[in-house]
Image 1 (cartoon, each protein chain N blue to C red):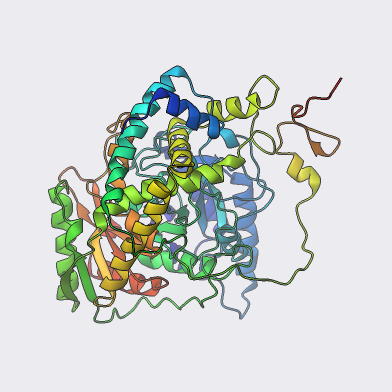
Image 2: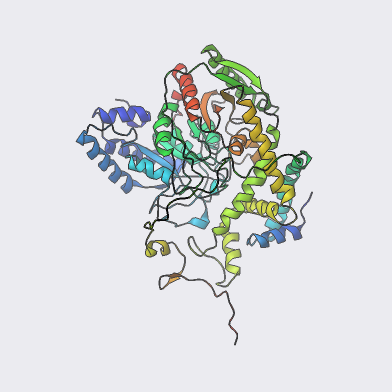
Length: 98
Length: 485
C-alpha cells in the first residue's frame, strides 16, 4: 500500500510534527515500504490467539501510600525553557472573550 | 604492571584490593585514554571528570579502611553510562537535540545501585537518538566509530558504550536493549554484552522508548566482568511497576553443566555472511567438544519478528515521545503561540528516524488501523513467545548469530530505513519474548572485524548464559584481542 501525501500530513498532525515538503515526500515512500513489509502479519491466522501486551503475567502491584521526598521545585523548573514565579510558562492556550 | 587500561574489570578490582593501584590512578588512566583517542572514536557525549575523580577518591578512602565487610567488586572501577540513563545533574540527551541541556533531577536505579557500590562514572556515551537505530548514525550529536575500523559503525543503539569498552576507555558500560541495542554493538565491537530479562533490572530513570521491550544491560571485555554489574543492577525496584520480585540468583562462573543447546535453523538464512556462519558453527562445535548436547531446533515464526517489532516498538514510542512538548525540559522552538510551538519544536528537534517511528506508531494506533496493525502484531507476538516456550522444553539454551554481517560501513544503508531494520533480524525476537541474551566474540571475518554469537535463555535464567559463555571464554581467547588504537 502507498500512503498518500494527504495521509502523511494527517498522521503528522496527529503526532504534532511539522514536516517540510521534502520530508512529507520521503516519509510517504519510506513508511509505505515498512507498512508493505508489515502487511505479511495480516496473512497469519490469529483468530484463536490472545494478544501479548506484556511478557509478564502481572497485574498492577500495590505499595503502601507513604510520603516520599521529591526533587525541589527549583531543580525541576531549571530544565524548563521558560518559567515564571515557580511555574512553567507557556503560550496562551485559551482565547478570552472580549 | 601492564597499562592500567589493559586490565579487565576483575583484574582491576584485584589490583585495587591488593593495594597495587588506586581508583584515582585507574580513573586518571581512563580519562587520559579518553582524552587521547576519543577524538577519533567519539564514544562519549559527556565526560564527567570532576564527578569521576571525586568518586574515585571516595572509593580509595573506603579501600584504605580495610573493613571486614566484603567490598563490592565494582568499588573504584570506572564505567561509562549510555546517554539514555539518567544521572542526577549530568547532561542526559538520549542522543537527541530535543533534550539538549537536560540535567535529570534523579538517577536511574540501575546506575544508582552501581554508584552506591562505589563504581566511578566516567561519563555518558553516544546512542542512536532515543535508542532508535543500529549504528549510532541516528545520534543528534554525530556518529561513533568502530575501534576495529574507524570507517565502520560500532553498531547501535549502544554504539558509544560498545566502542568505549572495545577501545579500553572504561572497564564496563551500561547499555540498553529494546531490539538488540546491547547485543548487536557488542558483536560489532568484539566485546561481551548482556541483555537482561524484561523486568529483571529496573527501568526507573531509563528514558522510555518501547516500554514493553526496553531492558537495561551491560557491556564489558569479557563475560566474567559482566557478572558483578548484573548482580548489582538486578532485583526488584518499587519505582518500576514492571520490575519482578523474583530473587536474583548467584552467578557461578565455574563448571558449566552439561547443557542442551538448540540451534534454530531459521537463523541460518540466505544473506548470512559466510564468515559469520563459519565462526558461529565453530563456536557451537567447541561447546559440543566441552560436553554440550547440540541439536537443531525450529522457531517457526522467526520471520514475523521483524514486522511485529516495527509495529509494536514505534507504537509504544509514539506514545512515550508525546511528552516532548518544549514545556518542561529541552529547548522550545516556534513563534511563541499554541499549538504551533508543539509542531515546530518537535518537527525541528527530533531527527528523521525518530519522526519516522513516531509517524509509523501514530498510524498503527490510529482509528481504523489499530486492529489490523497493532492488535494483530500483539497476537503474532504471542506466537513468537510461544516458539521460545516450546523450544525451551527441549533445550537449555539457544545459540545463534547476533547479526547477519559484521560491522557495516558508515553510510552504507544510506537513506533506506527498511534495510537498516533488517540488521536487527536475529536480536528482536528475544525482546518480543522478554527473554535474556548474551553476545560474545567467537572470531573475526576476513577483514579483521569481530564476529559475535548469542545465547538466549528462558525468562530470568541469566545464570545459564553466564556459565556457558564463561566456559567458552575460559577455553578460547577471542575476547582477549583488542583493536590497535
